[in-house]
Image (cartoon, rainbow, N blue to C red):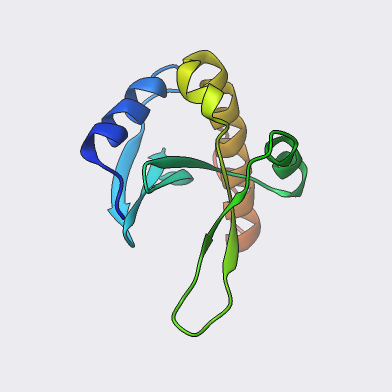
Length: 123
């Protein structure tokens, strides 16, 4: 189920302390981008932030789970996006901190996969 327009606007407002973001619909959900880098996704009115092996531990410690999807006839696939702890949605300052970490992880992941260097961000 795609995220509702109201939830997308709520998340955009809550991320104001992070900086401007673009939310684009994709594959029944939506990607959240900053400076052309996708660092979060929305699915079923749930926010998921990009993680790596180190940062995923913080999400797991809070009882959160990774985003998973399943194609017809195939096993579920877990992605490197983990559900944001619900308390973050009520604390824009802390959400901005977690979003900055997710953005840095996404930039590092993008650099590793493309072999290209990315201009340092001011985030």
